[in-house]
Amino acid sequence: MGAAMCKLSDKVGQHVKKRSPGCKYTCHADCRDLVSLDCHPAGSPPPSQDQINNNTPPHDVEKDRELRTEFSREEIGQKIDQYNMLTRDLLKMTLSPTGVYTGFIKVQMDLRRPVTVRGGQKGAGGGRVEEAFYLPRGVTNTLHISSNNTVKQVIVALLNKFTVADNPAKYGLYKRYRREDQVYVCKLADDEQPLFLRLVAGPDGDTLSFVLREQHGEVMWDAFSIPELRNFLRILDKEEAEQREAVKRRYDAYRLRLQEALSEVRGASEGRSL
Image (cartoon, rainbow, N blue to C red):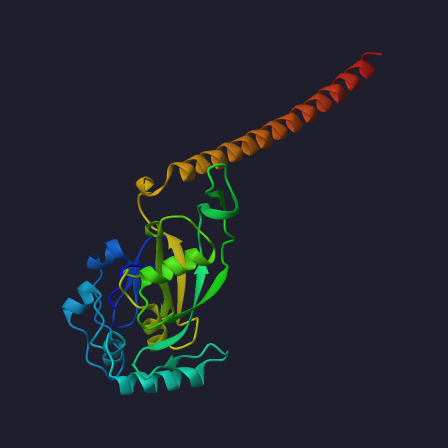
C-alpha cells in the first residue's frame, strides 16, 4: 500500500523538516547535509553515517509489519475480531465466507472550490439542472464499503452521495496519520483499498483518518464541462461584485469621517475669528 507525496502537517509550516534517528534532532531539509550527529538512544548501537546523512530511521520490525499488503484469511479474521473489540461505536467489520470483509470508513470533506450538483428540476431540454455551490468544509461522511473497493470507487461513491456531477478525476483521497508526534498527509493511489488501511490501523481516528480534497497542482480545466465553467464565472462575478461593494462602503465611510472632521475644524476656526 505505497503512498506517495507525503508531507508534514501545516503545524510545521510549508518547509519540510527532518529528524535524525538518534536524538530526534529537528532541522530544515536544506540544512541536514550540514549537520553531523552521533547521538543515539541509550542501550542501542549508534546509527551509521549513511542513516544520519539520509535521515533514514533504523530498521523497524513493527513498521515493516504495517507495510504488509496481504494477510492470510486467518490473520484477517484475527484482525477483524481485534478491531471490533476496540471500536467504540457500532461501525464494526464483518468477514464473509468468501474471505471478503465489509465495514465502515469516515471521510472528511475538505473542498475549497465549488462543486456542481445535479438539481431535482429539469431544464428546457429535459435534462437535470446543475448548480454550483460550496460544500461545508469539515463535514464527515460515513461509507459502508468492502475490502475490494478501491480509492477510485470510494471517491465516486462520495460524489454520488451528494449528487455531485463533477469528474471524479478532479478529486483525491488522502490519508492523515500520526507518527512520532507528527501528523502526515499522504495522497492514496487509485487502486489502494481504504478498508484494508482502516483494518490495519485500527478504529482510532487519531491514528488514521481519510480526507477528500481537490487534486493538488495545476487545475485540470479540460475535466470541466462548459456549464461548469460558466457556473464558476458566475460565482467569480458575484464575488467580485461583493468585494467591489465592500470597498465602496469602506471608502464612503472614510469620506464621511473626513467631512465631519473638516466641519469641526472649520467651526473651531470660525469661532476663534469671532
